[in-house]
Image (cartoon, rainbow, N blue to C red; front, side, top):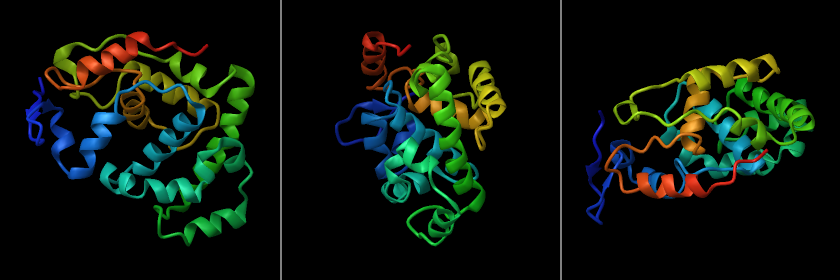
Length: 203
């Protein structure tokens, strides 16, 4: 079992990864694991997790504002309308990760997200149907996939999405609060669980 550690100035224990670099602390304390039902934020996170593939989250987090500016705030309809000229523009944009396959995947995935919203009502409703059951304490932050992330990945791929493997899907679930993966003893674990308990699942 991974144990919480004390490393911040407030002397409170947290998930060990949040102390690796300074910028992780605020992300851990205010975003990671808190449930999200907003389609734009969910789409953004799926895209950023896709860009992270093969890279570190520190790299992506440092460029997040650049990504937001480059991809129209991850507004699904706007990104779905991007064309080849936008791909070339993005390949020249040093504020993001310039990977043609991943850039083209974001545009494709925005188009697929529009289709999904048309059939499922919202991206949020679809995503939250894949919420896993509670995770045993001994398993917290010891896995990189789950049966639910494998199922989500498989279904997204069936719908034509790209760069959404099971590991990417699981990291997305952790970050967007579909599972409370804060380790036992982490100062945010109980807070996140309280928020999740009051959270109204979209349908």
